[in-house]
Length: 84
Image (cartoon, rainbow, N blue to C red; front, side):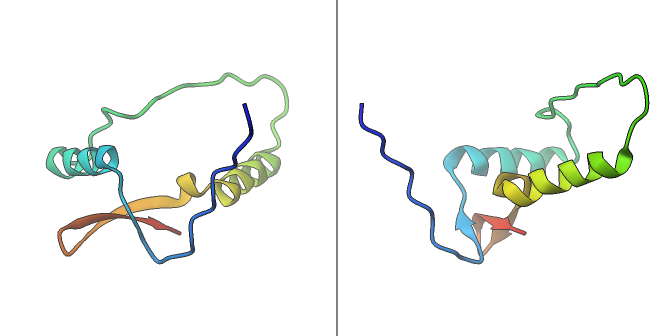
């Protein structure tokens, strides 16, 4: 097959939510602070831990991936995605 990159979306203040995102947003609003869709995990680390490097790595991930900076708002009856 031939490679076709996904085109980059234009810069906006907010973007429409998909139907699945809308459904999850409404469920969250109805249920309150539910953890039903959280995927918890734990790691055990032995030895020295450089918290500054871990924080830098997390900050870089958040900076690189818009999905980690995205929140959802209801504006004029429409669910929208807002990227910080």
